[in-house]
Image (cartoon, rainbow over all chains, first blue to last red):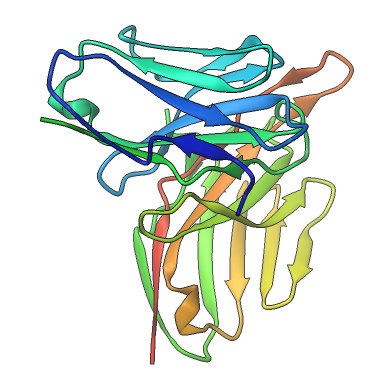
Length: 114
Length: 117
């Protein structure tokens, strides 16, 4: 158990809909990362927050947004969903942004868009 | 722009032999490198890391070697065990003092290791 909790584990929704994925980081971790993994591909970095502020942005679509709340949990919002958005979405947390420490991953949310 | 590359999508090794997984990077700012292991339907789990001030780090059966001049690192698993069968991701980051500029973890595309009996 990495200490990072993601909910829900599975999500099935229709095209055009909007969903919210939730992540609770490890206790004490201030940095949260979101990654997308499609069809056994690599982990594509989406966005990173540190203590409530956006720190880095990757290949995140405009239809996607995220935020980190004062209690440090984070949400990834995906809207106007398309079939190609079906993927595993991982959240990870670390104590500092990009410092010499590892990030711990949650179990992921499997999103299926039908 | 793939800054971290794992050019071998898969590798098959016999149990008891050495597994060598390779990773190349292009961004010379990277100063911290990590290996993650991922089983199907699970999140990646941290395996081992190495700072750029070192060229080798060992943890049990796992050793990571870093060649900064070649921008190359490798993960050695010896002896390989069937439970090592998984996808291995190489990742890299940097943190610049004193500006505090930090990068996210950049991952390679992974190498699927199959350890056969």
